[in-house]
Length: 266
Ligand SMILES: NC(=O)c1ccc[n+]([C@@H]2O[C@H](COP(=O)([O-])OP(=O)(O)OC[C@H]3O[C@@H](n4cnc5c(N)ncnc54)[C@H](O)[C@@H]3O)[C@@H](O)[C@H]2O)c1
Image 1 (cartoon, rainbow, N blue to C red):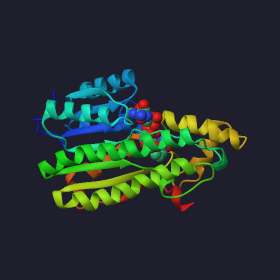
Image 2 (cartoon, protein in one colour):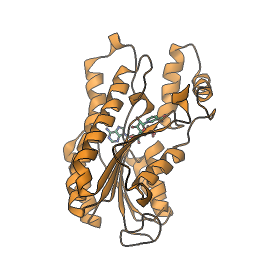
Image 3 (tube, protein in one colour):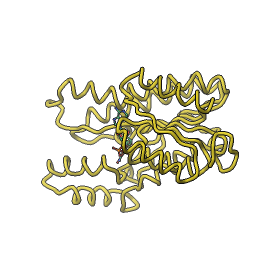
Image 4 (cartoon, rainbow, N blue to C red):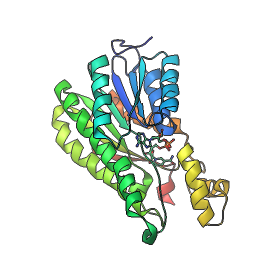
């Protein structure tokens, strides 16, 4: 079994923390780091699915742990990060994939819905970054990859609140990159286009209904809007995340990388 002392694989001997690891992009990312030699900590609010993500990492030969954590709670994030450091003594990679989508017309956005979205998508990311930064600073090395969205770079109707949180993640990433760069830490954002996860299936039904379309029809339209004429698989986003954490990307920081199959060109 690979553990944090195992030097085999691109991330051999490294420790990766992935929030939102239970499903979708986070799960694919946890698996990717596990299969390339890292010890992996899976953090998520959905405990059963998170345990199964950690099981899959272990089945890929990695040392892995599932930690129940609501990213809205600084105390829960602190406990999870402390447990990782206690177990493995270091954190080399942080990926903040925990997130949610809500949308609707601007005039109908309830304040409590906005506050909850900001707590998950933006404050949750800020908290993860701020808790891991001192650990990586002491090490003199680390990679932080925050998951934004193409919605943080461009705009569509009825997604003001989601877009705002995802643009916020890009601003946070740029500033953190400037602050942590002198300590050997890179900080980048990944902006996925529509990726075939539970989240996008739900979004497709919701947005499709507003356009008199089925979820499948909306997804087909979104695929047609890309240069590649298809939507992303979560593993394709995970591959870019792994690149950003790798030695090949040590001189790459403060960027918000569009992984959208050419959607932005349309
Ligand atoms: N799927 C897409 O098309 C797409 C596109 C752009 C950006 N994104 C972003 O990618 C990230 C991952 O999304 P996904 O598509 O894999 O969706 P997903 O729903 O499959 O995964 C999101 C994960 O975050 C977890 N989570 C939600 N709230 C949490 C909380 N409070 N505390 C801890 N964990 C929490 C969920 O339990 C889930 O496991 C999100 O930040 C999302 O905004 C997704």
